Length: 207
Length: 207
Image (cartoon, rainbow over all chains, first blue to last red; front, side, top):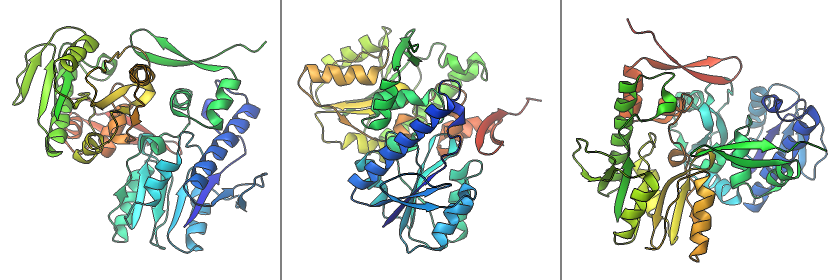
C-alpha cells in the first residue's frame, strides 16, 4: 500500500509563532515529518512525501506546489488502490497506531483529528476525493457517502493529535518518543503544573 | 468487572462558565454522565457512580464527599480486581471504545486524556493507587512502575477526549451520538467554520 505524507515546508506551523521563530518552526515541522515517516516505516510500509517544494530526504519526494487538497486529489487520481494519506504533523504517531489505520477493513477508513480535522485515511476506492477546507472530517464522511461508502472511523488518540498550537506541544512532551520530543527538550521546552491539575508548557530563556 | 464512574455534581465544569450558566453546566454534566453510563452498559458492564452527593439515577450510587483521588483510592482498596474507573465527562465515549479499554490485556491499562490526564483505566492489581493532581498520566505510569507494572496504553481518541472547555464542545457536535450532543443542539450550539480551516462553536441567542 502506498503511504503519502503531504508536507509544506514554506513558513509552516504559523500558529506556533508565539513560541518558535520561523527557522525553528521549519526545523520542528521537519522533525515531526521524520517521526511520521519512521512510524510508517516501522509499520512495514514505505513512506513517500508529497512536498510543495524540493526538500532533502531519504524518501521519495513528489513535488506539487498546488494547494493541499488539489495535490492530494492528483495523487489519488493517479495511484493504484488502496492507498493512505497521513498528515506530517502527527508527532506522537507510532507504528502501532499507523498499523491500526492500515489494517482497518473499511472501504474508506478515516482517523478524525482534533477539532474536525482529517489526520489520515486509507481508501480502497479510486473515486474518493478530499477537501481539507473547514470541518474536513464531516465533509469527507459526506463525500464518501456520495459515492456509496460508509466511512470506517479509526479511533486513535495518537493519530488524532496533530500539532498546531502551543498547547499541543504538551502532548509531544508527554507521549512522544521520537525526534520531535527530543527537539523540544533540546530547545528548552518543559512541562509545568499550574494549580490543581492544569499542565502547561514553558520554554527556558536562551543564554 | 466493576466499572466505577466518579461524578461531582456541585458546580461542575467551571471552565464552561463563559458559555453555560451554573444550572446548564449541571444539566450538561449530567447528560455527559448518562452517555458514559450508556456506553459502559452497551459494552456489557454495569456502571456504578461514585458521587460526592446523592443524585437521582437508575444506577448504583456510592456517595463519598472526599476529594476525587481519596474517594477513588477508597474504592480501589475495597474492591475485587479487575476493576475500571472511567471519568464522567467522556461525552463521545462509545461501547466499542469502552470495550477496547476493558479488553486490554495489561495488568494496568490506562487511557491517556488530552493534556496529560488519566481518563480511564483498568487495574488487575489491588495495590494500584491514583493521584489525579497535575499531569496525572505520567504520575500513574510512575505509580505503576513503583509496584513493578509497565502500564499498557489504550489508544483511543474517543476516550482521550474529556470535555472541559468551550472548544471541546466541537468534538461533541462532530463525534457525539448521544444525549450530550442532543443537549448542545437543543440549547442552540452549532459549528461554524472560520477562515481556511478553523472550526468554531457558537450559540444562538435565546429569544
